[in-house]
Amino acid sequence: MGFLISIFRGFWAIYTYIVIAIVVIFSSIIVFFTSLLFRGKAKKFNLFLCLHVSSPAILLFSGIFLKTYGRENIEPKKGYVLVSNHSSYMDIFANPTSVPVYHLFTYLAKDELGKTP
Image: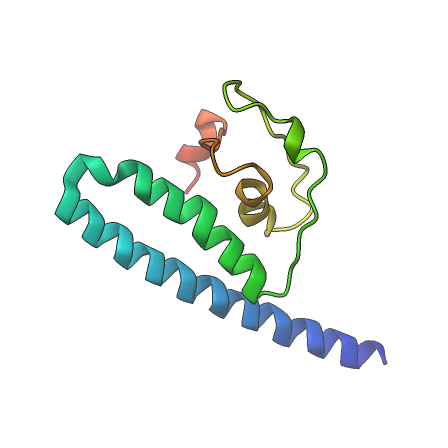
């Protein structure tokens, strides 16, 4: 039984990577063309597309359904720090999906992480 579960997990991981690749490629094409057509004016649209359309699509097609508690407590005019414990690689897509659409979501990382090959 454990062998079948590990085979299923392997197929599910491959399927999820394919879904991520398709959504990222499709979003990248849209971002590229909107950046060419609208120059700097497309920045907010491209951020919205990547964070609030692509991330939920990746989670949906991967079979991951989030239930977020306390979203109504986030005020539109305040800034917040969302801390994740990185229990999986899907946190990258779950974090922007869990905040309301009207909030601009950005990532924060150590400067040294940019220097890692």
